[in-house]
Image (tube, rainbow, N blue to C red; front, side):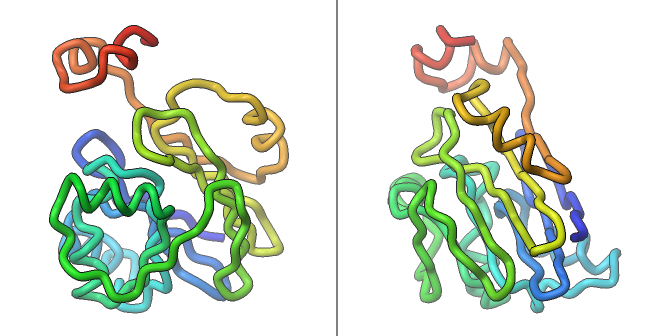
Length: 185
């Protein structure tokens, strides 16, 4: 399994994961042009991406979802609640090839097994992803609100893990975050 971070941070998140049978993107927080250019520097073509998995509804993870889908015909995989929240917050255009999944229910893309794990976060129906290609298991955890029951057990089953997070007390205090979230921190 190959992991390439195309960008990580409050300005946008996008990871590429490649197995023998599939190439997938996790989140679409950077422009399609940026993602295509960064993949091209590794000898990969965004037009061959098999799927785009969305972890939660925040714009730094979804900003260009509709563009990836329309411009490169990338199928989108997202929970129904997250998709509804994305549509309420932003204009993604018409999405023809969307596959919804249920948080906590494993699904397959060819030989790749995807386990969406519910995560605590102020986003709608956020998930982490465990990708299993039969050889190795990779966990991708974005914007964890805090350690949650079962996290240690999941981590113990992984060969590698990506944890994307940041904490800026000033940004939290001055930003448009719910009072409950500010209080937790």
